Length: 330
Image 1: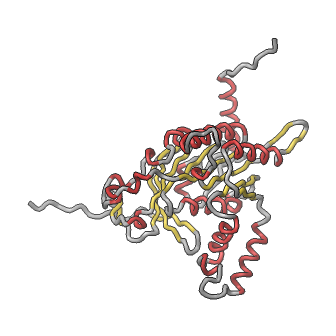
Image 2: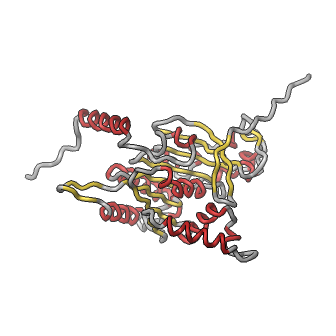
């Protein structure tokens, strides 16, 4: 009878690994991936750690893809000295559209302008895009466009990690990799999955299994449930303006597995002028609110940003002023 491997290990292993990690962080040999925003980095562990799952959830038009694109577009510039790759599952937008959005941030002009919708793009701007692309393609970023099932996504990730692994003295080392998925609800449902909720459970389980096996940081975009669109939740000054963990589609699955869960909202876009019971004054529809609903190794919080869709950029801003409380003069 063959010997069965023991499914447990002593606590010593955990202490050894933790101390090794602490020493590596102290010496700078182990670093998180910094995002473009100090508030986002502070909500995590000086950025997004490896072997973690970050979920960014929001309604359509809230700016989920804008957040993800800004992280990826600046990752190699903000994290010089780190060696890593990027694998993007882009089920919502074609790679061409994503590239055009990136060019938009480079020249500071709109998507329509780049497509010569109203007038031909200037030669100088077109050349700037050529020059940027020539430099950008040096970065190891790969894209999967065709929607896949959970099982197929897992197979692709494993294939990718094995292909880019290195072997020295019979020791295999995997390359740190950022894996993005835009977005979770577009993952193809397998024939054995009864509905999308079962698919989301299977997806969450798979992501956790894979992040334990490989040095991967997952960034997953997800939708919110329809109840976020109910009229009473869009009334000024309501607690219901704020995004809750229960608003996340497939909340039980993704919430349990996420290391960082961010719910994003654009109050002005949904005609909310005074946001939440704190009654933050929202004076334009491009203000984005990030609700850090779960930070496994950090602090939950609410932070404000400004979307510059013309440039496809996202800027950190201070919290807006609050509406003064009305005094009861009776």
